[in-house]
Length: 394
Image (tube, rainbow, N blue to C red; front, side):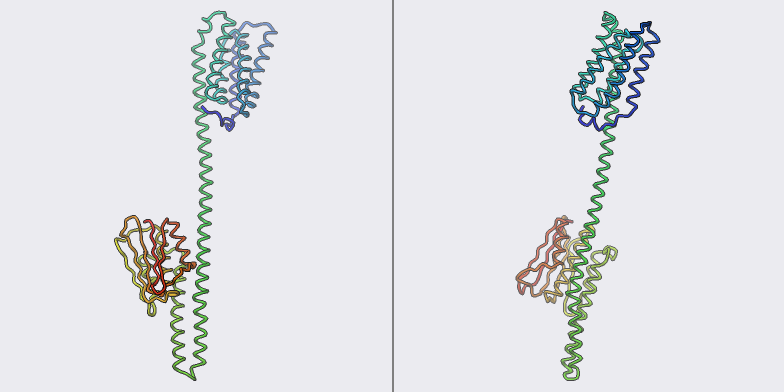
């Protein structure tokens, strides 16, 4: 039995009281049954008893705080010498031999397995030597040896069980505290991630509104002013400018609707993913752009993280087609054909680009997909449109 953590064991005053009580009972039984009348012998026994209790209480308290095995073994050697003399001078009267038994519980508390058995052998040996020394025959030794040994085994087993239970409880309490602390850290981390995600999303939307809606409104304002200036001189040119302003206002309205969709706290509250994608398409499908949504395979329930990732990807794909690709046709395909994977493909017939410029929207999609252990592929070329392919486990 490993005693390396014995210092963490909290020894109560009950152990000291039990030790002192055994000594007092032994002395009471001895003096009530013995015919010792010598004052000198009585003083010797009293001094030995005081020394035995003092070392057993204060010495034990000191030794329990040190890891030096030599000091611990020295404690038991000293106690066995004092206890042996007590048994010898009392001639084994009453229960005086049992004064050695409290040391058995101390061996379980202070020593490792090998030293524990060795010192317990020393305890029973001390009893046998002291008994033989005053009786001068082995019959007296064997008379109480079985009872002494049984008491020794009982105390040892009981103490080991108590120590095991106590250490298991301390370990459980420690693990419970560590688990609570870990849960607190995880909760704090989740809150930080949530706040960071919300902040990034707000920042992205702020940039989108500034770059998209702000630019559109500024241009609309300029177009209207220009049309007012031209209306008396060139009616046809003024109508053309107002038509452009009307189209740009419709596009600005689309930007506003998309921003409102993105700002919703819980997309799941607004219907299923299929319904929300179709609503997104309906709110976006203006002017000459045509958006087609296809579902391949049997629809299945998605986790909230996968659900939100797919929806945000559809938003970004449509926004990209509207703002950057100059596309007239967009095809969104959501495939459930692979039982272990969900695949989303967003393809437009826009102008494409030779170099892929990762804006905040595309970066956000990559981050969401990466958290799901998925992958994002972007294919584009000048004049060949823009295609986003997302694959996530599901």
